[in-house]
Image (cartoon, rainbow, N blue to C red; front, side):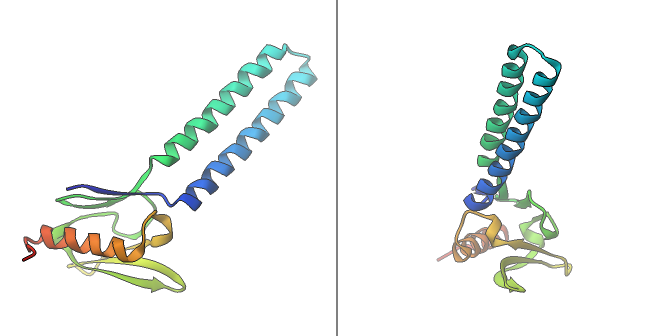
Length: 147
């Protein structure tokens, strides 16, 4: 069974917003260059469409980003997490919800003492639901079956 968690909507919106602002600035610069060089308006239209297309492509790409993937073998984090980015379930000793400062995080403790600290605000999921799902995967990974 594979479970994927996407980027949290507020964070995705910020990334898309920043991309759109950058696209608007690029269109403005291109417009100024076209006016200063007295170039054809078709050049401006083509470049503006290209920039807007790139911005829309970025928005679509961000929407589909999978930040955390859990499967039968282990987990993989595709965001800058503190610690280990991927491990097999046999290497994971515990999964717990806690805080790092004021930030709610999920900690995956590995048998060798290393760990993965994943800020919950990155994910589009409730922290307790995430921990329950992690523990289910962890139990299956260790061969523990529910009664």
